[in-house]
Image 1 (spheres, rainbow, N blue to C red):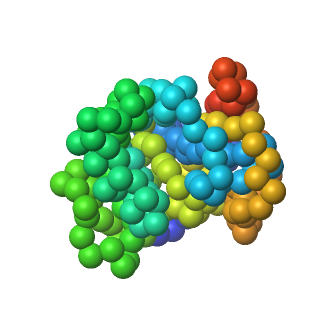
Image 2: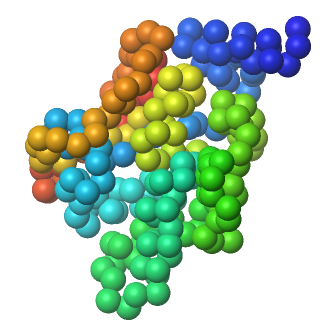
Length: 210
């Protein structure tokens, strides 16, 4: 069996068995985390974000040692959050998140981005599936995936192990929806393992893929 056929066989079995069961041993979890509204809008300009939300994502970021983005999301995050670290008027919640974000290594999947804006970022132009499969097998902590486009592709590929949704008390009425335009090969069954209600009325939901 050649290398590509072997990868295809792994993906064919994905969904019936965990990747760690297929390859043996402990593998890194790929976690997709995102803010969304009650009607499923994931447009970042329409989200409800407060200090408690920032604290939640700060804790989640500290549990990872790698973040994965596409170009658009990366350019929204950098240089914005590194600049927050230099701002003496920033709130404590903003500063703590910025510090956690800045300290974690980042991979950006892009064919058009010429160079990274910070020294802690690597631009990757290879196949998304192959790269994530390789990263899952490497030693380390969680892999945190942000944005919409790259996570949507990884969900289609069956490579997301855990989902973290923070649902804000807002009905956007318009804007891009979660998994809009995504075609899954089969229904994805998730298991709720944790939930937390914030003072604002936002709800943090943690799901594992069954």
